[in-house]
Image (cartoon, rainbow, N blue to C red):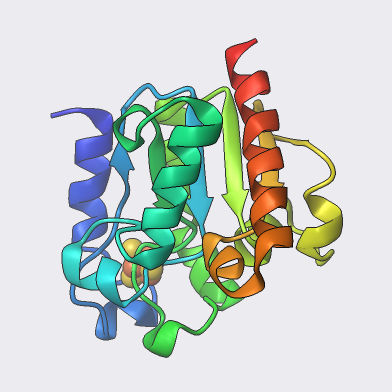
Length: 184
Ligand code: SF4
């Protein structure tokens, strides 16, 4: 059993925060175990909670397309996860205490996969990893260090589905930047 499989087994039994009370499945993460690019969203939604896999709904389909078109990778060549592994009820944002309870899984995933680049998807994930309150519009113009990896913040694909061409174009630009950093 790989380190990630062991962690996933541990997460499947986790009851460290109240999100365990309403989940159907723990959505640990999926993808290549030694991927050069990791994507981190805020938390599972309804489709993900039912499937037990990250980013499988409409947002996931868009993310998959953008990853293919802008990074030259398919979803099996990257690693995808979230800040919390259980679905917040009614898709509310995860609470800081829930993110803190779940942080050890994400930290272990980053240490195990050891990607060159981590792309954070949206304000909640980006702010949680960086411990800041700035808006994503400002954060996405910069890159950061996260446990020795280059972090590239961008919008959440749900924002692109709601927000039209400006957000989508920004995401394309951010993923192209992430590709350059991952492939150099
Ligand atoms: S969200 Fe994370 S910390 Fe909370 S129960 Fe699920 S796996 Fe455990």
